[in-house]
Image 1 (tube, one colour):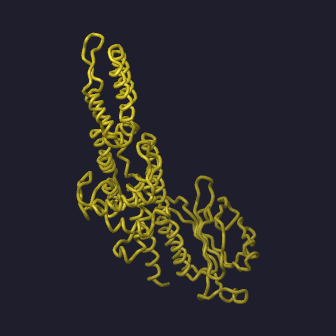
Image 2 (cartoon, one colour; image 1 turned 135 degrees about the vertical axis):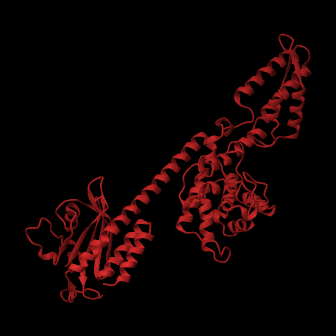
Image 3 (cartoon, one colour; image 1 turned 90 degrees about the vertical axis):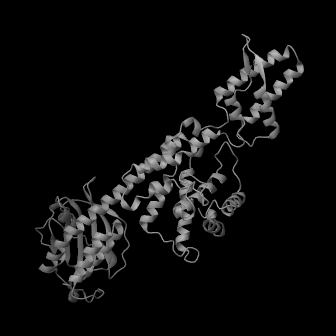
Length: 478
């Protein structure tokens, strides 16, 4: 038996993590090792004590099948092998000893015209002798030829003692590789579940931007996917499956740090909180009462001021006339019941209402911006694998600018990971076009593209990525 083939099998078992790729490749190599026409691998399902018929190969006929399960019992060759945890070798399945509890189901042969003859079933057991699956090889051949109805008896032979010994020895390694691959898949699903739950927790605190994370992830992944395909525009940009996972996790967690921002700041729909606006309302009412008894003009002026306060409280661009009214309000004072001086607008209230755009004061804006610091800090506490160790760093780069004026680290140019540069484009595009923001109107795609192009020209966004995003019209394919 060819030692090189055995080495190749072992190498594939330790190098492939994807379950489907691992099993398909392993089955192909094992069949090639002992010249088998067909074969299959069953995966053990402990939840219902069954074998899942999952992988099948056949060199002589095209096989189309749907995944199905069989109970782990004594009725079939594979299930008996798994149940008893022993190798089962049948030289001709049409002549199984009647004393054996298992039988061969001839339905497949009748339907396909195939002739199943020699079968070898080997249980796949881990180091604790727990069942992981069953390997079944079918129709050992004397040479690599396609089976026909006329050559079956001449070509098919029983499995030899050497075949069985070699395959059984390899089955232990196959079982460990299979178990590790299943475990790796379980860990990935667990991480996906954790990340999904984290996003839901964040969006529950910040319902205004619900859906933003998913949209930014889709846009970013599409840009990266197209960049990977384009050998002319980005000849050095190539992504492995691990890179794809790294970028996807970084996108999904890019706003993770919002969990460290006060909720009332995250959800601030207007410039003043309701209790503050209510307090101002009563001050105006009292001042109006005082003014009305002395001067109709003074009363009307206060009415006009109050209307300006209500307009200024909205999350729109502050009109200059309203800004002037606010200054006069801030300088307006009247006598209280006890003769104390009361200002229509306290300094903090005036500061909030004077915000030029949006609803946040400078202090509140800095608190919102701090979410990227929190993202980096919180994610850094997770013991990421070597392949995912850059998640914390990349996840917080979507607010960095090419010219170094961004945050949290003030990185410049290529100091910003290319995944961070891609995410920055996606994040701004979604923020501009999102229709769920109460503090601003969504802009059209054309306007959004013009804005991000200007940002690129002003050395804020990566020019090549922005140009690629626009030229390829990636925004239309998400």
